[in-house]
Length: 157
Image 1 (cartoon, rainbow, N blue to C red):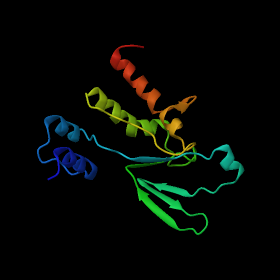
Image 2 (cartoon, helix red, strand yellow):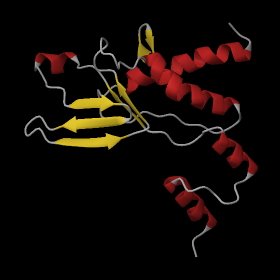
Image 3 (tube, one colour):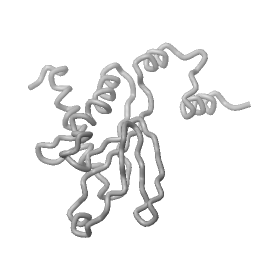
């Protein structure tokens, strides 16, 4: 017989509702709190531009399509969010504010409600994790935007 811990983990991983959730879990579920997966396509860096690298990604809504540049074969994936940040002039460009509004704000609100929260960026070196989380220059990432949002709640300037 599986342990209660294993059973709970299985429900979380498979997103199966707990038949008798504790009050805190029920409140979190009604607040829309859950695991969300987002992918973001960053602009080419200087090296990629110098090599005239082809862009092998397309994004449409929550779908990300990777095209093999050699044979043209496509592979599609669906995430909670697919952010196109490759071209700042594109109609579907996802700004730092868009990413924060979709992901960071919910994490911050749940933290203030007393829930344990976690937001992390994963990817290979140079893939844009620091840009999304911290930002560069005037383009603030999720962390500084979250800090700015907490100042009014704390009563500090």
